[in-house]
Amino acid sequence: MPPIDRAGDPHNAFVERRGLAGIPGGALSGTSFAVKDNVAVQGMAFTAGHPLFADRCAGETAPAVRCLLDAGADFVGMTQTDAGGFGATTPQTRNPAAAGLIVGGSSGGSAAAIAAGYCDFAIGTDTGGSVRIPAACTGLAAFKPSYGRISNDGVWPLTPQLDHVGLIARDLAMLRRASLVLLDGARIEPAPAAPSDLRIAVEIDKAGLFDPGIAEEMDRITEALQGAGHMVDRIAVPGRENIAEAHGVIVLSEAAAIYADCTEEQRGQLGKAAATALRHAQLLTPEAIEAAWEWARAAADRMKATLIPFDVLISPTLPVAPPSVETRRIPLAGEDQPVVVAMTVLTCLANLTGNPVISFPNPGSACFPKTGTQLLGHAKADEALFGVADQIFTDLQDASPLSGTEPGL
Image 1 (cartoon, rainbow, N blue to C red):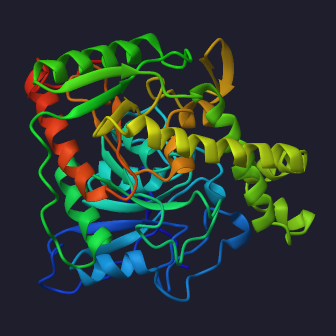
Image 2: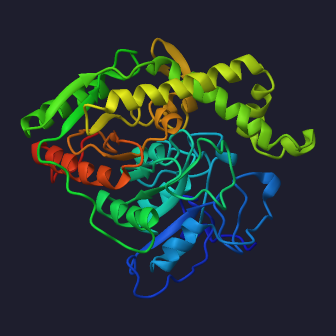
């Protein structure tokens, strides 16, 4: 495939830049989008970030991409990813929103393409937070749907039972517009309006995972939403301290099955993070894998019960502010954790439970980029979650003394 002109892509957001026009007159006419390099677009790069697949192109177009083209959106190119989705930093891509900080991953190229102004929204995939993490690192909005609401056909898998096609967008309005097309086909119907008096759960950090500044933002969010007239309860998410471990075991074991036919030589060409993960997978016992799946099933049951009295659960997207690109380990709950563990510790729950999640920059955040706030809704109630998100974002914006000002450092 022809090399990209890096003078026109200084952040290395793209693997391949080539345009496809959407069908004129559709619901998304006048918008443009990019696609993560593990989602198929016919004739385009389909490497999943693996050097082993450097020359591979897609033979057909994934249904999610076709849906957006049919709705009138113009395709602008394929974006960078951590190899195989094994990561949360997309190290080859620079953050257009905050030089020196990670862009997040594994859908980091998709976030960078939007943050740099090349498109309005982008397709990513989310197995443990991979659309929400880069959105939180670049000041963007992201949506992970309920499991099964958007087709995974044409996606290079990481963990099929946890993989979700999701979206990143420049703002909540664009995210809603594009997401509703993917959820409902080419029709755009208004999402149900949220009640004026929402029942909101805000996570309290009983597991000791939040940075103090992040915990303080959760306190301010609680106060702002109470002031707006909503019923707000602070709750601890059951089993939060064990969820990331179960998620990690499941991802490694499922990925090992996907790459089982690779020779040792081929594994060496998958990328460092992928090869390392697959070596770790070889150490897993059948008992550990079964225990992780039992924990995942229990987490889904607990989340369903936890949400019964509420319209939504609010938590931070990330437990810390986005780290610098040089960071290798992050202090978390009294231990130094690898960056990928720290970045996914709060996002991976929704992949285990299959609930829909929207992440947006907290309007009241004094950080730059503004810290991400994620809203987890009832399973299969994705459209309703957008109405709730609009209401909550508006209330937080109205309560914020920083609205309309440049964020502080």
